[in-house]
Length: 72
Image: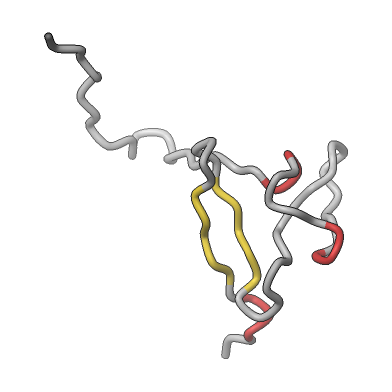
């Protein structure tokens, strides 16, 4: 049983960070303070560091990525 309050839209920002926006309350983002406390939805904006997250894979589950090479 899922509530619409617990559904989020993943947005990849132009700085390659990920932000999670509430599907029910447009403009509300998941964010944490420096001390790890959650921020309230109406007090968050997508350009704040508090809502920027990076994806990390669990140890041993990293996909096999080939290094980027410049060609001329």
